[in-house]
Amino acid sequence: MSKQPYWEDVKEGDDITSLKKIATTQMLVKWAGASGDFNPLHYDEHFAETSGVGRPIVHGALKRQWLIQLMTDWMGEEGTLKKFSCRYRAPDYPRPMKTMSEPEEGETWWCKGKVTKKYTHDDEHYIDCRIWVENGKAEVTTTGKATVILPSKS
Amino acid sequence: MLPEEINKLIGQACGTSIFEVEKESIRRFADAVGDANPLYWDAEYAEKSKYGSIIAPPGYISAQWYWGHSDKRDPKEPASEVSGLIDVILALEKAGYQQALDSGIDYEFFQPVRVGDTIKATSVIKDIVERSSGDEKAVFLFTETTYTNQNDEIVAITRTTSTHR
Image (cartoon, rainbow over all chains, first blue to last red; front, side):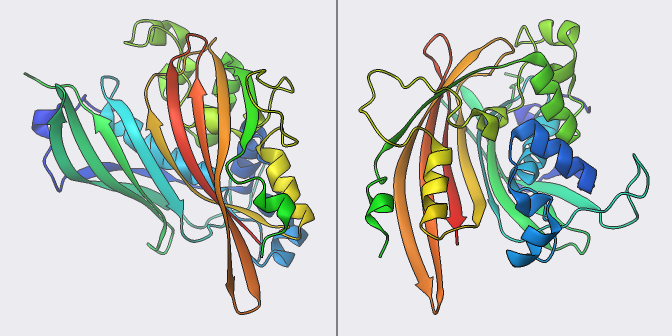
């Protein structure tokens, strides 16, 4: 992980360090088990087709966790995540597996963000960000916002 | 028009979930996300951090395992036929809304969630709204959940939206 950012060093308009993710069918199985979301929309070909999404889609909540990681990686251990919101705008489709551990070639997703506001309140130093997930075609499939408290040099 | 069994859920508390935050469960969660943050994995490292212990990733508390997790209802809650969020979704399914889509979430975080914590989650159905466009009907479910720990501190509040067709 990178150096701890301090509030004074961050500017409005700064980019949040991008986070690369590859959704695979195997990752979706791990996520279903870890989160307890067994909606067949995410693993059952027949159900996904009759539901109108074509084939199984990435869990919205998994994309949420990607975006949360985007912020927790960037804010460093001394940072604190105060608020987080996201909306799932479009489906994402996982890469199938080529071997027991490697996925087939395919899409790579990027979680990105931009600092929109910096301010202080009650002695704490806040950073607001706009965040989103781009799919392999650079289309935005998930949007969101986050507020973190960063340590201050003062 | 929403059937009465669905309408009467608006404003209802959906019971209280109670769950323990466990180390291996945190690891499985972090592994599924692909997040190698040592605060979730390495007890020795985490104990030297400002948290003093392994913590759960923000968002861990929303895992579906913990919806309606305890079958013990908080004795101060009014009696309700609905004992968890799962029951609300099942009621919607019974009324013909078979597909449930998570649309998004808003979090406010107040305290870290540490390994060994016992978390209580109380959900309230804020609103259930039906919208039609042509032949298509969809129901939007708005839920607010308050999470507290064993010290009665609020650790987080969430507002979730799901779409049911």
